[in-house]
Length: 114
Figure (spheres, one colour):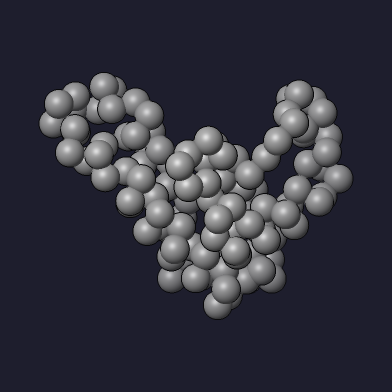
């Protein structure tokens, strides 16, 4: 089973960072569990990569891999960043080693990553 970062991880990030935008008080309990829910998704994605990797679609590099690494970068200041999971860290390292990442970092003035 492939877990899609756009369908699973990003909505949780948004719920955690912008709870006032989605049903306000009604989302308070859900927002309190965001960190736990994100960690559970990372466990699943890390296991998927271990069993089927090195990329989300196996040997084929796809836009989903780049999207996932972008979401991983967003997690760098979270209590438990995505790079604490070994397969996620390895994926980020592989993608960051690509020349296109050097160009991206230069153009956007980025100095750190996932």
